[in-house]
Image 1 (cartoon, rainbow, N blue to C red):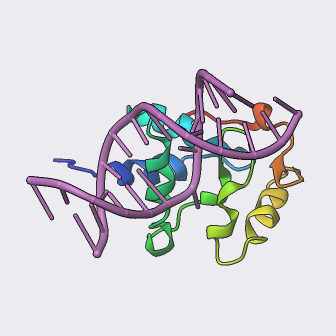
Image 2: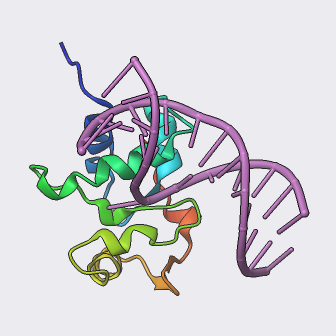
Amino acid sequence: MEEKSFYEKVYEVTRQIPKGRVTSYGAIANHLGTGLSARMVGWALNNCHELDPPVPAHRVVNRNGMLSGKFHFPTPTIMQELLEREGIKIKDDCVVDFKKKLWLP
DNA sequence: ACTTTGACTATAA
DNA sequence: GTTATAGCCAAAG
């Protein structure tokens, strides 16, 4: 009986993001079937701070590839640091070649 | 049970 | 091209 709440599914999908890839809130929401409620994805990730294991929320950006949620991290720089470490280049708080690195579940 | 919010997206001006 | 507003769904207060 998997009566998983909406946000639990978000964590599952977000954890499945391969290294060096990123995804958008809309893509996750679409996979969950909510489609239009990308806001819920972000809100689900709002709990990611107490999740176990932690969710690679740094790989989740908005539809523009912009690090909109970076301010929600312990430090707003950790997101860019991690993404660059994965091989993703950040330019002006946006993911370079975002479309090429976009990963769909 | 109702209201408020929330890391978004799309369309309009 | 940029900025503003509306629409969306689900959970917390």
